[in-house]
Length: 597
Image 1 (tube, rainbow, N blue to C red):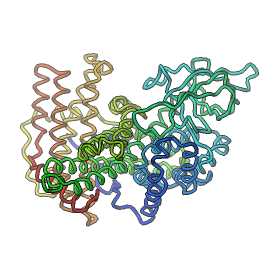
Image 2 (image 1 turned 135 degrees about the vertical axis):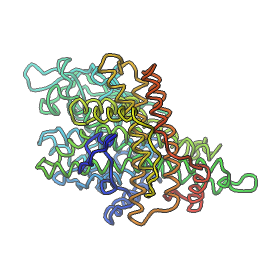
Image 3 (image 1 turned 120 degrees about the horizontal axis):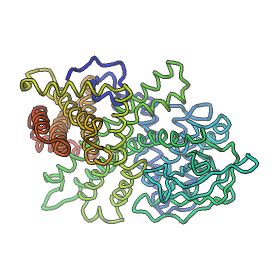
Image 4 (image 1 turned 90 degrees about the vertical axis):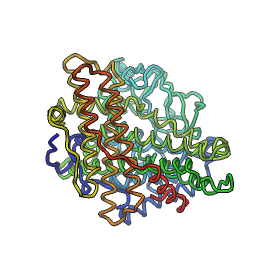
């Protein structure tokens, strides 16, 4: 594959075909003094207001949401991403990502908070009229107005456009009358404003703003959930709910644009929140491993426990690297659009659209990483971890929802591949030539082994090979679909394979960029290279396995043999003693007695 010269800023999905450099990524270690102060302010809020009130939050004590939203508003946390014109702080995107990290250990309140600042506020910011913004955003930023987002219905979840809720214009043309039902609605128990999706005349999918107290708006009982028990989740019913026509949000029939574009940011923020939650769980795992004595020594001395601690840390550190890399891509895009004269709010919206692939990646890697972390958190603590007296059980239950809401991880995997193909068809991503170059390379002599003495030469070669394997698989599958030989809508397993390959290589490349940049900043430690080696060894094994599985699903005969030979050819990362590397990582964590990478 001929790698073209890297453009100044990679567009969405271009990481597949272009290399990236350390000067085009952000790592949390390079945060400024101001960013650190903001991070500490948010972390202090968690320590002072969330943790002491955990039981009251979990029991849904009346008044707690209002109290916490008021405190968040006083600190500016609800408007950190909002324009100053409405009382916001208008912080840059990377600083907002750091805030998500700092606030990631809020338990059930994460859901309430995220639903408000993301899918609650952003539809109004992106699509509201000036009058709607002026009426609602200042109160939402202050915490006086709490928001809720009403999309899901009993018969429409992932298929949002199957919604049955109707909106009919009144005979005098001055009001819309809503009838229908929504379910699994976060914040419904205390929200003051609802972003509601309904079909005008049963046809045009459209957004509306509905205030609490409007006649005909009623609510079901609080849902009994597996986790996030402290968050409010109810059904919402509309029976001849009459709202002014001025409460239509955006354009009639364009509600799908609101839903999809707002979900991009919701997905990103969900993944970013998972960072802080995972670090807290790892720290508790480490401390228990140091304290718990069995067979005359702390369980942290045992290899089986060291494996778990190290793997928790490797997955968390890697996911964090990917998420902050994506954060910086979005920030750079916003800045470049503003420099072109695009209005700032529209620049944020267009940046979210540009990186829809990356936002889905963020959601998946964050949610699946924290699922692993909390599962091993419970396992390390053993019986006490399974007891509701310890925070581990709650963390385990709370984390599970992350793979479901903001679009299931299966839907997001489909989004990744679908958007890659869409960009290719539009000429925005040169997937065809990149994939064709890989196939031409397969017809040449075997690839010589690299003897490049440069630092990280093996990892750089591994990234290129991972990209070649991924392009080979998704390029072949895409061509077979275009030729009518394959219907990927009916072959979702292949789509899942392709998305997993994309995410494996993105994770690995993001980690490499972070380790290299730590070196440039003089902050790299020996255990960072251990993390890198273990990740690359395992990623190379996983991506090769996934590639073979996909190839065997759609190819046969000579084509199958050629592609399988290609996988073998590109699977060249040298073996790693991952046991010793993990032990060194675990020893660092145990000595620090906290997550300290």
